[in-house]
Length: 143
Image 1 (tube, one colour):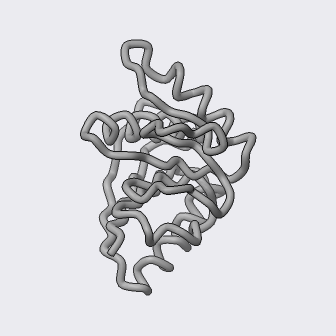
Image 2 (spheres, one colour):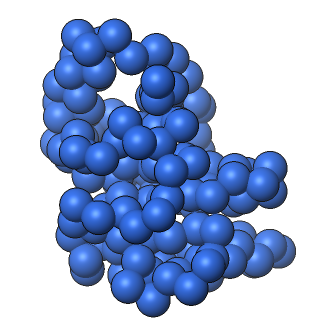
Image 3 (cartoon, one colour):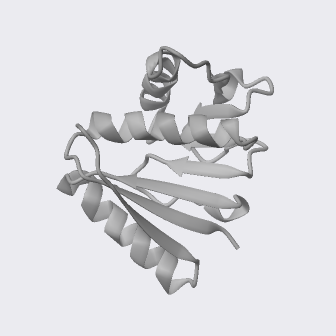
């Protein structure tokens, strides 16, 4: 059964959410995991792909867009097909991905902004009602 972690950031900035997603993906990759970053649409996936090049000037994170994926351990994408990924899903969309249960872990990153927080609460209820193991992590951020 998929383990679901909610990371509750002490920021109201959507950019902080994306930065945290990059950090989480990097940490997971360092531990040998494959990561799929699920975005609300293709332009958002492309912006996140660009951010992954620059979020940490001291580290390289091998990544690609879903349609350009050629074995990279970190993939950004949107839509209903995450490809062969099944390790860690980082959801940056407002919806519950229909394919989330095929992943070992799901990370939901939430900032203190109603446009992001309200749909996240609905997803939390959805997962809880279906019996998925849930963890919440309060994260203090600078931004």
